Length: 330
Image (cartoon, rainbow, N blue to C red):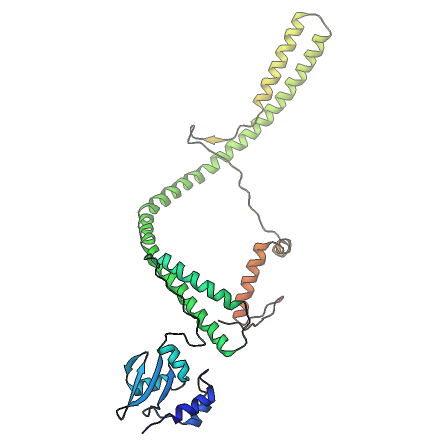
């Protein structure tokens, strides 16, 4: 006949607040096929009761009849008090080290997204209250850990539902891309190749234009000098012909100035013109000097930090850095 002696001794060691250590298990003695009457908790949080009924050992796990040996194997490491068992199994309360349950309410949305929002808001209200005080006990630490796990599960559920809802759009987008992108890309490639084919001709036209412009500038300067001389001559004389020549010379000077204006080399008609454009890029002539010049830019700092983190995780120490280890809850 089994009794509650084993369970009583176990509760005396843990007070129902933690699992038995390996040393404690060894001291108490445990046999896989010999369930001990008492109250326990398995890793999934089910409340387990093992007791005698009509001369036989029976068990309840989560309120459901269970094989005593199986219930014992899952719960023997975590004995709980009868008060804890009653609170969980009979009144539906959480274990002391578990996050409080969030009331689902009667108005939970049928929409999965809205339902998760409501659940999250319920979690937030309780968690924010819990976060106001520091953790001073093992129960509180365990509660924070299980709560974090529960919220992580909620986050994963939201992400899984997001992926499910988004996947048809991704598939549809991929189908559209597969239909149109090859045409777009091939046309763009041919267009670019035709423009590159024009480069040499346009550059030659640009060279000829610079030569023409230089000659036109010289002509404009000559015409301007003649206009100024004609204007002075007309001012010193009342001769009508001199004034007419001055006006004609001034007009010729304006025309020469217009002719000297730059004309960009181009090909094609209106709406389909291709011309030379200036594209600006950097040629690095001193890599180290450039890094020094850019070292205070936020983008460079972020990139360097990322590369340093990668090196640290690989155990590689580079000049100018050290590996820092920080223990955090995860």
